[in-house]
Image 1 (cartoon, rainbow, N blue to C red):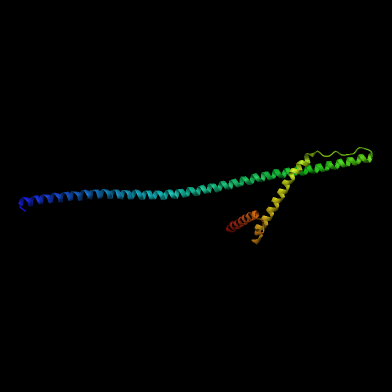
Image 2: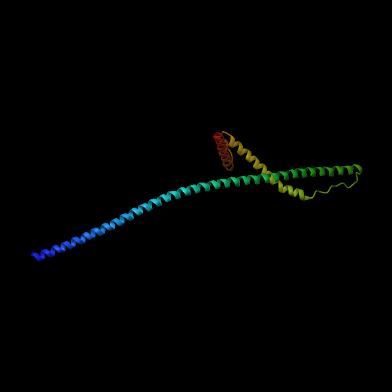
Length: 202
């Protein structure tokens, strides 16, 4: 290798070294930029995670408030249903009293008819004292009403049976009931237990 070749080689190596240095500098600059972006992204990610936590806590509070509202609405609905039932029960009681009074009036009028027939025969044994039959309206209405009375008596009897079984300390009392009444008796027993627990906490 002569001088010219050596100088050319040195120049070439120096140029390559310069290119490599520029590459290093460029890569350092890009790495620094990437580092800044990484730090910025980490900061944004941390903020987003905190926001997620805040949203989750807020959602939980909203859910609890919604459940509370639904419970309050359910209490109100139950109260309204009980009030409506009591009003209907009072109306039915008033109607029952009117029916009893009307039935007593009917019985009195039937007795009056019989007494009038006997009085007529006592005065004139040859009189035509045949009494025409009653209009069928009452008999028809009573025939329609009788099943409702039987149903109400059955409901009351079942209610008394369920209440007695629920209050009993013997679990077998519930098991002796028909299946559909067992469900009611178990629910009634749970209500009694919850009620006692609330009273003990006071």
